[in-house]
Length: 167
Ligand SMILES: Cc1cc2nc3c(=O)[nH]c(=O)nc-3n(C[C@H](O)[C@H](O)[C@H](O)COP(=O)(O)O)c2cc1C
Image (tube, rainbow, N blue to C red; front, side, top):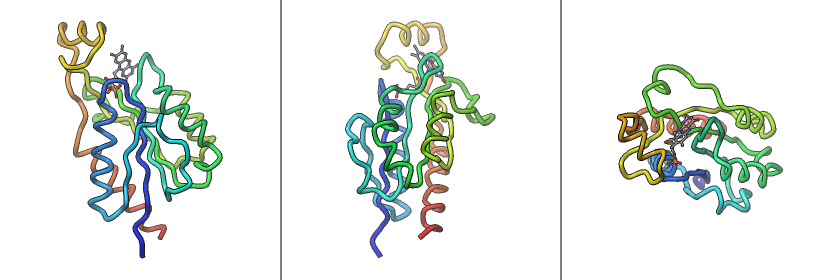
């Protein structure tokens, strides 16, 4: 039997969400799935995939426009596949402490696409993050890398389980 093909697409400004997507892709491949990780902007056709994981970073309470447009552009075909959404955001440990609800645009996409799940992971702002706001936040001790590899990988393995169970 050929391995299920899973697309992991991400909307990222400064690389933190891309890193989460990459960890998800690695964990899915460890489980025997054929996972491809792509920037959301590069996704024109999802028909070659059995399932899609789509994530975006949060800025000022809004989900990445790249992720959102990817969802809108591919809505017709995403509706007919298992879809899992994630957000990368809080630069503190809150995402590890309790479930963080999707922002309104993500909730709407969940409904439109019939997405199975959404999860919010901690994000990252470090001295290497470009942009004046990031620089100020780091200078005042408000930065840090709060991407929790164990949580990210556990979620990816959970997705593998769902997809394999459906086989
Ligand atoms: C100007 C600015 C605004 C942000 N707004 C939010 C926000 O509203 N909610 C949130 O959870 N995180 C917010 N963050 C944190 C980012 O979502 C986090 O750093 C994310 O991991 C960045 O991902 P990216 O590098 O892939 O763009 C903000 C960060 C910056 C620099």
